[in-house]
Length: 450
Image (cartoon, rainbow, N blue to C red):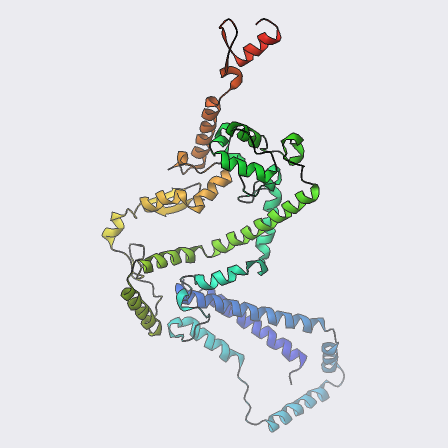
């Protein structure tokens, strides 16, 4: 049986060996695919083991039961030689009763770990159980993800996402839920972001049905002409329900309890969106690879799919390393077979030309096709939403934040200039046939000059 001091010594040795193994693991040359995944899991196992050793050491040093103190006193007391020979006798007695029991040194275990680290191609066992569809981390198995999505409400929340969401929600900077969501529009079921509209005339372009839906969700009167509905809805922009005219409501204003429930419900929905955003960011590379893999499979015939599955099965059973870095001196993109595409095809599609979009966070796109396509994708739309600019066709090919803001100011000024102003543009005619604008006509009428 080990003494407490021997246990402490062993835990210290194990911690030092684990630290050395983790350092050597991280200093290994960059890997790809299967090797990288196995390396990450080896690091995780070593880190967990290090934390367990640290916890055990902490308990031993705290010495809540006082056994460590008693052992030190026994070794440092007046009878230290008697204590030494007593323990030596116990060791001899133990080995006499167990003559064939051999203790394997801790160094042997870490030597085996070093062999696995230095020769990853010789590793026969996978450290993670992936499904066949996932290709050992290359793609996503959407079937199992859908089954988990059904029970998404009961999932364990990520603490970092929760903390970031609380701060963004308080500041009103969470994507898709601006500060205006805490005002009148927080009660709408069919959310209509009024920040993209500068006048009621622009709202009128949405049509009667859409305006009626938004007004009904707010509890406002939804009758009248298209222009009346647009004016009524636009008047709620940036206002709370308490600030609106009571005559605008169809029945009665919702109470504070209902307002609080609606706010909590929307906050809960936004919290789930925050977790989904985080998962999408973590699995962004795998999602893109999965999309390409599914599209590639859809373009094949049934026989080609079977041949591809057979080839994949044969490759997974072979002793060759699937994740060897292909010879690619010109850094060409990889095709569906994992090999660099021909250089003439690379030049034909313009993949040698890179485009950088500042609105997307200085993300770089290869080729004009990917560059044009990204204006309708989520990354660019999110960047435009953060700038408070609608992602419309007016901003096609605009990649600089300064240019986008300048164009948005110009568009708003043009809309303001073209806006219908009834006080100056609406015409009135008196009994004599004289034509005046609305403002002049009302002034003359009040003075009794008509």
